[in-house]
Image 1 (cartoon, helix red, strand yellow):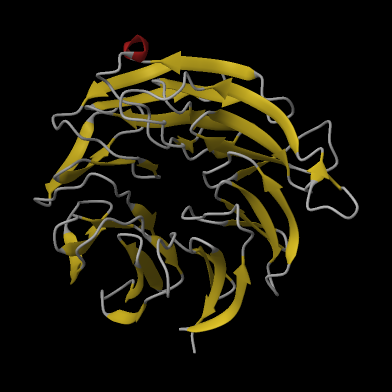
Image 2: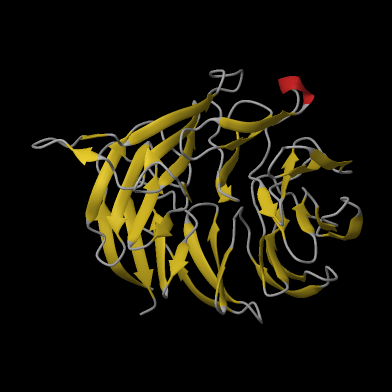
Amino acid sequence: MAVAWTHETPDWFRGSTEPISYGETIYAGGHGLLALDRETGSRQFGLQGPYQSSPTVAPVSIYQTKTLGITASGGIFGLNAGGGQAVPLTDRTVGGERWTGPRSPGPGYFGPAESATPITANGSIYTAVPGTNSLVALDPNNGEVEWRQTHHENDPVSGTYNRPAVYDGRVFVTAWPKQATAYDADTGEQHWHREIGEQMVLPPVATDEGVVIPTRESVQLRARSDGSLRWERNLEGNVTDSAPAVADGTIFVADEQESLHALSLATGETQWTAPFSGKTTPVVAEDRVYAVDSLWALEAYDVATGEQHFEYHPSEVPLSPPMVGDGILYLANRGRILALEEA
């Protein structure tokens, strides 16, 4: 890989979550938000704040620019995708933060809550509320709660919802220790709820075939209509912090032991396995699947065969999962944003 450009970030930025792209702009969260020109890496604007997660771009009706939904340990925020108005002769802007959504209750026994990854669908922002057992749908215009669902009445023994998946008018979510639930995207009405056998469920992926649900040791496919089990494949894994990717009828998932697996979405059968030891959230683009090994090395594999094409080690860690566009990989790398291209 060759470095197309590098952006050295301000002192306040510390990024390890996946950047996103909208139009000609790259957005990255990390103790604030940075907006960079996609082609050159030059800075368009920066917003200091608690913002930590990957942002999501949401449509609005009362502003000329989109809203960016983003979360932090303290709650959920809506930011101006255009950055607001720059204050002359300073590094500050006004109008960058549009609203504050549901807040977290504060640091718990294990410290501050982890930020959640929000998503946009059906004109709403869907996300777990950090530090709670609640899932919300928010109006991107003002952050008002359209609906809210809470499991176990915020019992601290249970866990927060994982990143949701939205498909065909339903929101699919999982939560520790072993919950899988589907809600109506418009109303929040529960369609079905299942208790998974294992006490570790991770973020789901919703597909035409069904809902892919990874657990500590296995991968399941469940029906979108009622959550019934279609198949389960035991990978003898020890997964605690990975998520799968699905593309062209294949599931790509790490077992956090020694392998990256490519499984048939229809049957769960193995298409290939490749040596891979760490936690990861793969990203698929064209004929490559990209995986960052435990936040420190980027590896690329052939989608069809699992053959490794390259491995890239940055000069500092952690390294985020990549966002891929037009053959360029964009990654947050602690105090830098990187754009990589094949040499």
